[in-house]
Amino acid sequence: MFRLDTKKPVHLCDGMTRRDFFHAGAIPLLGLSLPNYMEMEAQGALNKDTDVNCIMLFLLGAPSQLDTWDMKPDAPAEVRGPFRPLKTNVPGMEISEIFPRMAKMADKYSIIRSLYHTAAAVHDTGHQMMQTGRLFTGGLEHPHIGSVLQYVKGSRGDVPAHVLLPRPMGPTGGNLPHGQTAGYLGKIYDPFSLNADPSAKDFKVPDLLPPDYINAIREDRRKKLREAVDGSISAFESSATARLMDTNFHKAYTLMSSAKAREAFDLRQESEETRNRYGMNKFGQSCLLARRLIERGVRFVTINMFETVFNEITWDIHGSAPFTPIEAYKTLCGPWFDNGYASLVEDLAQRGLYKNTIVTAMGEFGRTPKINPAGGRDHWPQCWSMVMGGGGIKGGQIVGASDEIGAYPKDRPTTPADVAATLYSALGIPLTKELPAPGNRPVPVVDYSARPIRELL
Image (cartoon, rainbow, N blue to C red; front, side):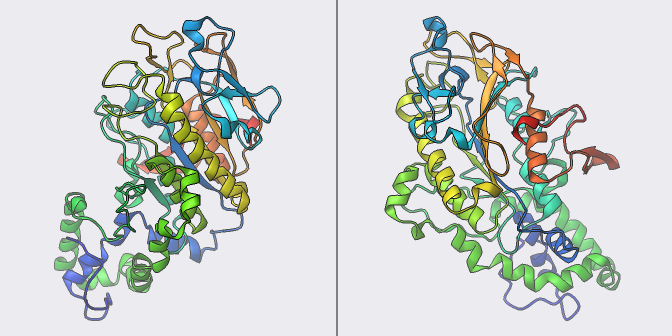
């Protein structure tokens, strides 16, 4: 196992053992991209005053547009559903009654009501497209937007650049990648995953050392490093990689054992009142944790509101077991989201961080306009809604419109690639920026056909 807890100081050019060498090799695999960070720091490319962060709230299961942010109160009962529209603090903008706190701050976010895609109506496909801007095809897995941000801008000091809360997405029926890794950028740009429930009574600051379960992904790298050392240690020591490690190893080690990094995850420092305001559930406490991480320099936080669509309450309202009844939107899903989201935006704004932090809430597709015989709604990628605000994104707007039953875009059709282009633009990443895909063929961060949503920028 590659460890960071080696018992002696490590100097690459001064008595370094092969075991110590392999310990050092573990550093980037936690999402702390030290080489990238050091390089950018040396070039003066990190402007902390203008850097924009992002918190992506992924509403796994796919919320119904008709029961959240694009209600149709004048449509037939089988279309409009059981919930009433609620006026917001922005004239002419209404959202569902399941979001009362959100309705009081509509000036802080905008709603996109004309999202659509034409790929398969399965959860995994939507997960990929909304988090990467592209579809997994030909074995090519594209990187998450947060991983691209880490690749381009690196980490800020001693905290990860991209953190995933509380756990990665689990099974959702498609057996395909979910778009939550660094893809072809490599494991060193994967997000740091908490892999714990922050609302649990026994939750504690996570161990920032690499867990055993990632040993398998290191074996190929271990072999190559061993060959490099055994074959010619002197040649390696004269290489640019060795010089970089020799110069920065102690700083890297300090970052990984940093009290600041561990303190960022310590929810015990928050009052009981604050924790209750966010909601004592996985999503609410993940939102609180995201605020703490952004405050301490993390660039991108992805929160999975749920982890699977099977046998638990989610936004996946087919109406019959093992899925969720539509009534849960008002009793569980809505309140959980409303408290977590509203508290997060309020706290970021109060601390002066909202102007530099995008908060976006999205699902993987929409829901059928007509309620099915089981009393729920099925998959519908032809039209759905999402929310985006903060970080320079203009609030208080409605972008696009659906038809009279929320079935298809009527105005300003918008694709997942357009959403990714908007986020990249707001994060300061040029859409022409090329990424190193397999086969030495550069790939732009988004497809050339993607266009940012200019109304929001």
